[in-house]
Image (tube, rainbow, N blue to C red):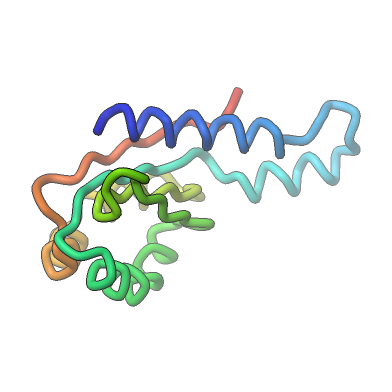
Length: 128
């Protein structure tokens, strides 16, 4: 499972590096790109009892993710187990994301969605 998180994190870093502005771009473009990327990424990994049920609850919780400064969230599923889920989001505010990640409200939502066990949550810096 940790390998899945590491692989997802590597993909995020590589895709962000590919999309990162080159030094040859004008300052306006570079500033806009930095805003879009945010201050890093939050990765959540967990297994769920039923992906379809989980996905409905996850989709309904979009406003809470947005309020926590999480943007451009992408859901990935293991090719070997469709109920093994990794969510990768950009963060605009690390403090808000950390509060959200440790909140009782999120844990209650995860329980309602059928998350099994304790989720793994990582906070990653943007590509250097």
